[in-house]
Image (cartoon, rainbow, N blue to C red; front, side):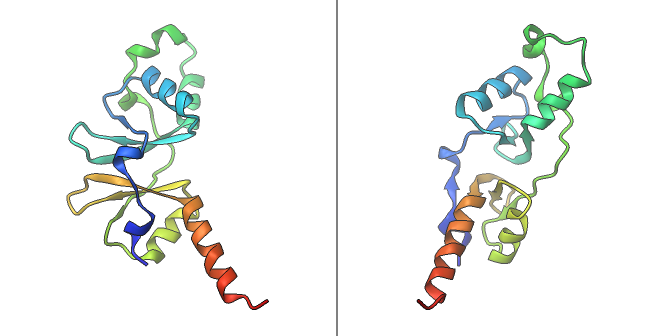
Length: 138
């Protein structure tokens, strides 16, 4: 199976850039009700994934900050605790499934590391469920 079959294209993915502020990131995640979003460079390279936990741990360790100051903090200042790895669009399904075990989504990049979309873990699970149902005799 080709990874492109599962791809949610970049245009439909909520992302932030590494130049976004803490507040912009937090508000974007809240608005879309996501717990994690991809972080891209200004040129479109996949950099990392920021999670609610990353933002919360940063706040916990910076008691001097108030909500009103968060627009002054760049997302690049926030340490990211997990390394959500991306796959290339030509990767095999085993790589995709291996990453999806520990990531809610798997970022997909082209051969120049330009972000082209994500594959959601739920889509992979749905696909596997259909395969199991087809293989299981009644």
